[in-house]
Image 1 (spheres, helix red, strand yellow):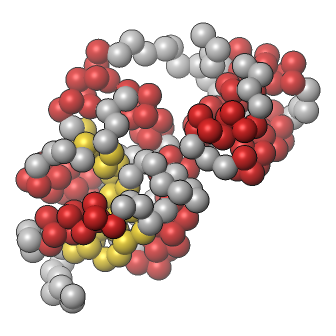
Image 2 (cartoon, rainbow, N blue to C red; image 1 turned 90 degrees about the vertical axis):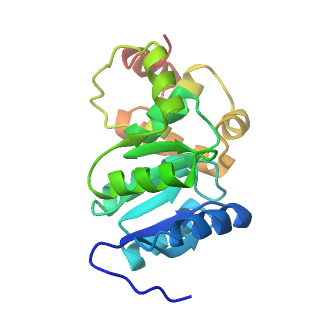
Length: 217
C-alpha cells in the first residue's frame, strides 16, 4: 500500500521477528495519517541494511531478535546513522535491559502492552529529538539502585562489557552465548575485540580489567 506523505510525516521502520506483531503495529500506526511505516525487518542485521537504504526517522525495535539482537543493532544505528533514532518496543521491563539499550543509543523504551495513543506519542517524541519511556519502565528505573559510573578508557560497547563480565566469571563460550541470546561465533568475535581493545590475551588481566570497570561488584 502506498501512503501519501507530508513534510510532517514520521517515517518508521519496524524491527521485530514476529510477523503478527509487525502487522498489528503497522495497522495501529497507519491509522494516524501522520506516521508512515516505510519498511519491516525480522532481525537486527536486516534492520541496519534497511536503515541504510530507507533512512527512516525512527526504528521501532525489539530487543530479542535472531542474527543480530536489538542491543547490537542500536549500537550500530547510533554509530552509522545518527539521523535515525531508535525506540525500543519490548515485553521486558527489566531495568538492566532498559539501561543497556539507552547506553546503546536508544532514545526511548516502551512496552508492547501500551495503548496505540501512547505508542504514537512515544514515536513523535523520539522523532522530534526527545526521549520517551513507558510509565512502568520509568518507575522501575527510579526504584532500582544504580551502581556508580566507572570511567571506561577502553571504549567497550555494552555487549563487550557483558562478555567481559562473563569471561571474568569463568563462563565458557557456550554458556555466555546461551545467557546473552547470541551465537557462540558472536561470543568469540566479542572476545577477540576485547583482547584488541584491552591489549591483552591473559585471562587474569581481563579479570583485573573487569574489576577496574566495576563489572564484578
